[in-house]
Image 1 (tube, rainbow, N blue to C red):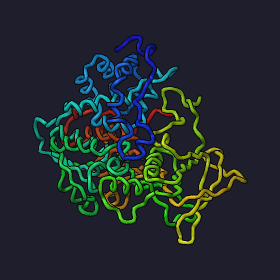
Image 2: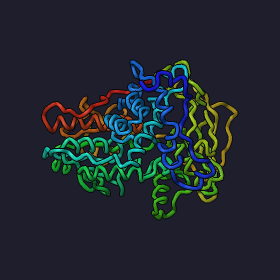
Image 3: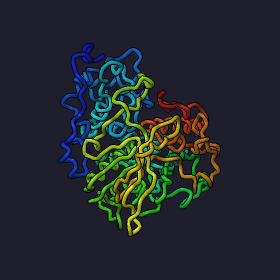
Length: 489
C-alpha cells in the first residue's frame, strides 16, 4: 500500500484541460501536452489515495484485469519503470484506454462507496505517456518463430491486440485493413482532440518493428476472398467491428443534410490531416442536431463546434440521467449517471426525453428542421406526450445512435458464419467461429462495446488462436470469455 492515510489526506484531482476558447481554435488534444503530462504535478498524491484493498474491485470493473493497486503503489514510490511493466502486463495499449475508456474501474473503486474514487484513468495514461517520452516503450521481438501464419482482418483495438499478442508468441501475423490507414475507428472515427493520431502511429510503428505486417486498402471478401485467406493462412481472426450504423426511419430521412456520424467524423479527420474531400459535410454556420447521447454524439458535438456551427443540439430519447448513483445501480456496477465530457464543456445543448417525428424539407430538398416531441417511458416503450410537438431548426443532422452489428455482406456471408440472436458472429469459448480455423473478437462478436473490452477480447482470442496453432494449452493471457459481460444491474 502506498500512503495508508492517502485516501483521507488527499482529495480527488484530475488532469486539467486547456481553456475552452483555446482548444476550440485547434484540433489538438484537450489537455496541455498530453493527458498524462497534465497530471504529473499531482500524480504522487493521487496514487497515494489507492487503499490497496484486500479485494480490489477495480480489477473486476476492468475487463483487462489491470493491476491497478500495484502500479499506484509503484508510482507513489517513484518506480516508473516497474509501474510500466505492471501496466503492460495486462494492457497492450494503455495510451488508448487512458484517453478513450470511460473508466468502469473507477466506478468499481472501493473508495467510491462513500467518497470520490481514485483517479485511475489519469494515472494510467500518465504512466504510459511518460514512458513514451522517456523512450522506455520498445519493440518486443519474439525469441523464436513458430512457422505458423495468422491473418487478422480489421485493425481496430481488438485486431491490434490480437496481432501483437500472436506476433510476440512467435507466429507470423498479417493485419488487413480496408481503409487507407491502420487503426479502425481509432484512426478516423475518433476526433483528433480525443486521440491525436501520432499516439496511434507510434504504437503501430512498434508493432511493425516487432514483425507484424500491415496491409491497407485491402477488403477481405472483395479484394481477397475469405476462402483464399483460409488457404493462405493457418488461422484467421475476424476483428471487423460492429460497423452497421443504426438508422432512423422517420419521414424525410432521404433529405439532404442528414448523415451518419461515422461519415461526418471520418471526413473531418481526413481533412485535418491534409486530405481534400469534395462536398465535405461541414457544420460551419449551421444549426446542427446530433441524434443520440453517447460518446459518438459528444465527438460530433466537439467537431461541429470547432467547425464553427451556429448552434449544436444533442437529442436523446432517454430521460435526463441522475447526478449520482440511482438505488437500482449500486456500487460496484457501472451506473448510468449524468456525465460531462470535454465537448459538453465547450458548448451545445442537451435535450432529453425527445423523439424525432419527421425531418422537414426546404425548397431545395435539404433538411431545414426536425419535428420532435417529448416522450415518457412506459415499460420498454417511449410514448409521445400530447401537446409537446414542436420544430427545431437544423440544416445538418448527424445520426449518432450506435451500431447494430458487423457488416454481413461480403466476408461474413461468404464464409457462412453462424450468427447469434443479436446478429453478431457466434463464438465458442475459445473465440472460434462455426468455420474451422476462423476466430472472431471485439465488437464483431460482442456487439458495440468499449475499447477496453475490445482489447481484452483481442488478447483472449489470441490465447485461443495460439492453442489452436500449437495443439496445446496456450500461455497467453485470457482476461475474458466471450460470454463475460460488464458488471451492471
